[in-house]
Each structure stands twice: as structure tokens, then as C-alpha cells.
Amino acid sequence: MTLADLQHLLRYTRWANGRILEELLTIETPPPKAVKLLAHVLAAEHLWLDRMTNDPRNHLVWPEWGIFDCDEQQHELDRRWTKFFTNFTEADLERTASYTNSQGNDYSNTVREILMHLILHAPHHRGQINAELRDEGFPPPYVDYIQAVRTKQI
Image (cartoon, rainbow, N blue to C red; front, side, top):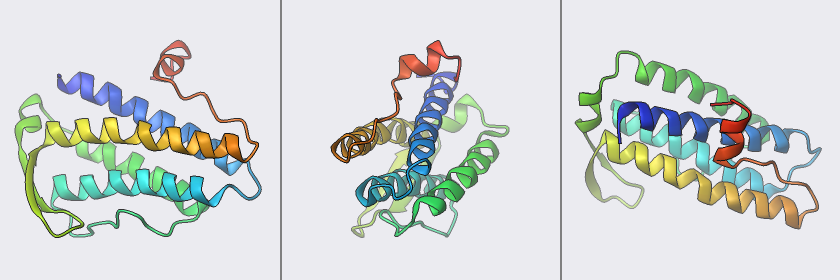
């Protein structure tokens, strides 16, 4: 997969996460489980950016963020991704990031592998969030890839 392909799919991921966030912000008291799952998705993006950039922050995998914290983090991630991809080249995808995971195990992965993981990780949890919204009586947002393409969001 090319750099352009990965960036395109990451734009979709960011758009879909934003739609979920927008929906949760319209609910006076959003379902706590949905907020927790969204916080995890956003924190995972931060954590992998930390690892790819050697940022010492090392975000928590399951932070205790409320919905307004999630909104703040979504905007911060927009800034971080823009900075990350500034002057980024196809060759940078093969750069290796070494890190210690949340269980204390050491690993190394290429940036390409990490970006693919992030792109594939978020839909699982967005599905859980939408199921939670349905269970709580709220209509879930339509975040399918084809919707983003049809509406020219990506």
C-alpha cells in the first residue's frame, strides 16, 4: 500500500471518528461505554504517534476521558497528524519504531505496519460504539467508507 493510500484511509478514519464524536456531543449524557470506547480509539492514535515519533508522553491505552476531553483530543490529533506527515516520504514508511507495549513487552514495527494497524483498529470500536448507541435508543451515525466518498468528505 502506498503512502497516498495510507493517508487516504487515515483521512477516512479521522472523518469517521469525528462523526462518532459529533454524534456523542449532541447527546446530553452520552452513554459512558461509548465515550470510553471513543477515548480508547483516540488514545491509541496518540500512543502510536508517540511511538513513531519517539515522543516520551506515552499516552495511556484506556484513559479516563469525558466527551469534552475526547473533543479536545480529536483536535490535538488533527494537529499531530498534520505535523507527522509534513515532509513525509514513501521511504519513511519503512522506518522502524521500537517500543514497549502496555504489558511491558518490547517490539519493533515499521511505520507502514503501525499505520495499517491504526486504520484497521478503529472500525472495530466504532462498531461497538454504534451498537451501544442503538442499545441506548440513539441513532448511530453512518460512518461507512462509501458514505465518506459519496459525500466527498475524503
